[in-house]
Amino acid sequence: MKENTSAGERLDKLKIIETLFDKKKIRILQTLLKHPEKDFYLRELSRMAGVPPATTFRIISLFEKTGLVQTIKVSRIKLYRASENENMRFLAGFLKEEPLVIDTFVEKASKVEGVERIIQHGKSEKNKANILIIGSGVDSEKIKQISAEILERYNFRISSLTLSQEQFEQMRSMGLYSGIKKTLYDALRSQK
Image 1 (cartoon, helix red, strand yellow):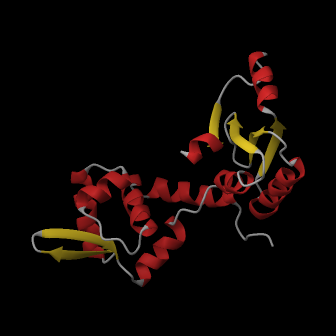
Image 2 (cartoon, rainbow, N blue to C red):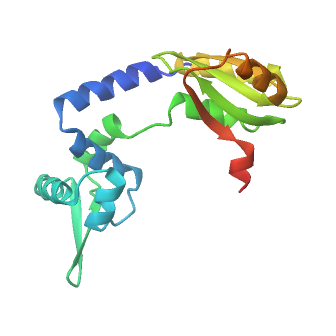
């Protein structure tokens, strides 16, 4: 079943919202929406949203006045949480972050037997990305099936190439995989 909006359209809508509104306000709202049951200390919310504490305080004060944030006082300490009201639910529809399409691919592909590393080669574009699957005995058909599901569901094309570690090292030494590379999954690191 195809989703009503593609991942590219969703990102475009978020960019429109970001151009209309202060990005710092949006990051604070998104942080609150990611953790709707959590009570935040001001500095904790500031750190998680990546917004300076003084700016976070100013924004939270504004959100309190508009009813988007609840303040819980415990002794002399104030905690903040997303309000459960119609306005916040409305904003959640626009701002709630969904997993990126590539993250969804990596989550599924990393479970295929034999996959040791997943590397993005080059930058991802609006509707496509180039991915290297490195491992031994990897079922390329399963990887193609995952790519097809991503294309059908999100209208996002993943072009993948499955290589053994030795093949990857040989191609890299020949300069075939120079440029931008980003490791998305490493089985050895995830086991630690």
